[in-house]
Length: 156
Image (cartoon, rainbow, N blue to C red; front, side, top):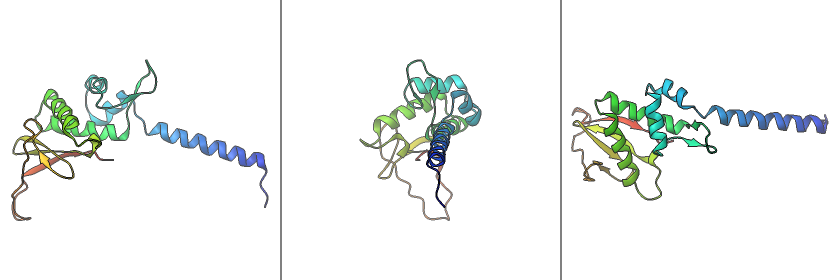
């Protein structure tokens, strides 16, 4: 059965429109991100202005957050729920960004809480962000209790 060329073009345009809509749906406003993560919208704006999350499409436009940004915000919320202040969580995030391997995205760093301290982990090492000192977990197998609680891993 031969298709009419006009129908083919219309189907292509509809498909492209659906693809654009799907991309738009994967972006979140700060208000929506605040509702999803439970964080205050003003705190998310501060992190966006600091360059940790979000992007602006053009000057004076609204911030748009990706799914990866939401995962990072959930990690920050988990740190807050674990008893760490927003300032401490922000310092940890800044240090993680500064101390991660060159060319490695911030999303490749896992955030853990071990014995009341925040610890960062990437593929090669685990370290404390404040001192840059490497940490090791010497617990033995499943019989010992877990020494670190995974707060967030926002690799996408």
